[in-house]
Image (cartoon, rainbow, N blue to C red; front, top):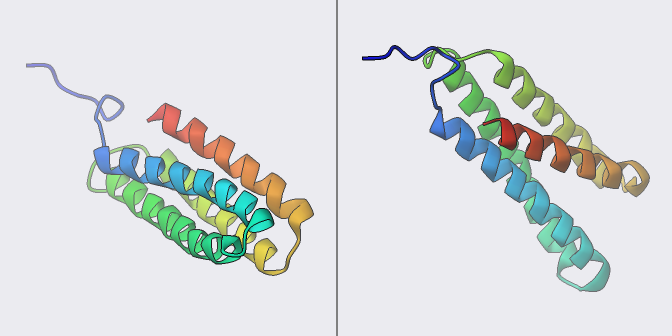
Length: 120
């Protein structure tokens, strides 16, 4: 019987959390487009922001669970915490109506989230 190292272990909850975060960030881009073209876009984007923020918090929880009790690396905790910080900045920028930074930051977050997903 082969012994698994911590690098070889799979943490499905962590993968699920990263997938959910990536999907919600993508849906935020879609709802941003609807915000420009429809009357319900603002509501959809606002609700989506809350869901995306919750997904980022879930990612932190999953990373901590994979690290401490699961015996994984602490690196995902730092990455997830960074995403939560970016999500916090994103929310502040959205509420303050600063699209010149809000939009590029959203694109950056999506790219980083896809990269994190590819690593899982």
